[in-house]
Image 1 (cartoon, rainbow over the protein chains, first blue to last red):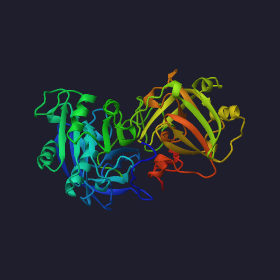
Image 2 (image 1 turned 180 degrees about the vertical axis):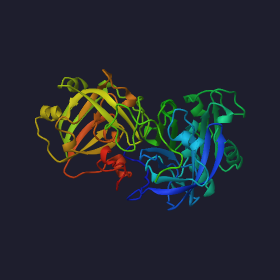
Image 3 (image 1 turned 45 degrees about the horizontal axis):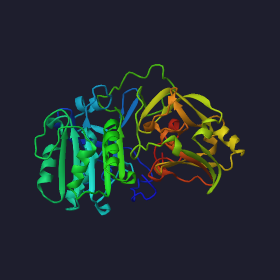
Length: 254
Length: 201
């Protein structure tokens, strides 16, 4: 963040709640499900933005949570939210255990004008995600692919195990297109499965190695995950000599 | 609209009347910021009071810590939906800062500026009268970098993005000038009790 911030996305002048219908549900990992929402009032958005979801109990009690949009802006009318089940949560267990296709859910968006990327902003692009922090980065990668952009891009994605990599098969398929997208996986509780992947937590040496895959530099850097992951990854990025102003973060509690 | 099959958590106990709409209580202290955490050495730290473009007072770390300090225990509310009760802060009240500079509140609005380029706007009425401080300590310990240390603005009755981390200047302005998040769609005032999350709320 700095005075020479790249252009940022505007929100609508007013964010209105709307009713969205769950169109489909897909199991992504043992702990993550994707929910596809059919919007009554479709909106334009930028990759990286999120929506607020609001649940209402019969006594009027309401709970709200923010979820990043996983689908690409190029896909219209339906948005995908990938929701991780937090056992002590209030909203995510509802989605995992109760919500069904055909249910109506209130949401509003798009929200967030900082952690956003669109193809005209260009690259090279370094994306760094931990766990479900990959979700808004997936929207960026899907948008890049949908627009047939070829700008140098690398995703460093850290998860505990191979099984817990959200969108794993799709990411491997995107990598196989050989269109300038590089995928680097870092597993923290298993050995690496692919050549050039890692079996440790993110560190500066790993980030230097990953940056070398896009010729050693990045113009836009997006880091998303639980706060300890983001703190560690951004500290390591600064160690590689990248300027703080290039690095945008999105964090969640834990 | 009632959501089919949703009953929610047991309603907050002890927090009755203290949790604004759409918020949930947490015992943690989540960290949210738009970029990497800056680590600012006390030797490099300064704080400037400005009226428009003109600096009217400036303190280094030692000078600032010699100003009168007060403690505040307040509930805080983050626009990302968490609230935390009875948080304990120590720092320099904005009233005492103005007194040390020898001025009354010069204009009706202010912009807080931070070391990392962040800014946020707050009406002067929300800063004076014991409502706000430049916080130097949380829970009797120096403020950690990821929570905004060495010093952050504390305006506990507004959503917490108004409590700028890593503050290095308070600038009084004639108009209410939108800051970082306010330019990006967040509410110009941010009162959690009126649920002023986004522009138009």
